Length: 112
Length: 115
Image (cartoon, each protein chain N blue to C red):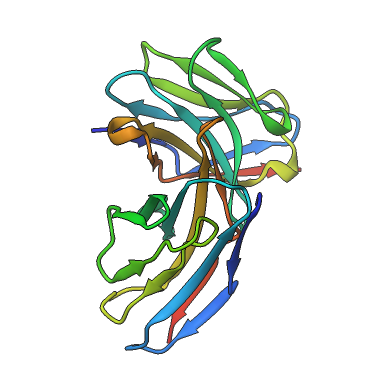
């Protein structure tokens, strides 16, 4: 899983609560990503950040928010506005020199 | 628009037999193509990539992929499958518009290798 850590591994949330998923990388990569994985649907891009203090919405950004205050960190907040948040969430970064994307181990979020 | 298709949800193969996992793509311009593998409850691991050069790309764990421009395909292959190869495989293409910061993934193909 490269030099990307995600925490927690499992997260349970009650409906109406906001939760924040942590993503940290020590690979010195500028670009970082959040994906959502649902069975049979592959990976869908939530948000990405090309550089510190900058981020863009991906294909399914509604109900999510991010920040990029440090190069190493790209936390994702799942808000109560996300109607179906139960999924496996993957953080990633890209080595622009080799065009290789590295992934964290993922966080499985379950809404009770 | 860039897209990736993996036509098989599942591939079954006997250990020791060759395996192929299919991928076709649609891009504007030259494609940047990738294969990743995912084991249960884990992140994706990079296997190999094609950007330019030889159409046959060799990657990790004995996997290789063949880029075919006329058929817009990038099939993943291995001469002799192992039970430990059983996993979920994703084909992906880098969207080079807007600086190439986005990657588009196929839906994934689950490979089962039977002993």
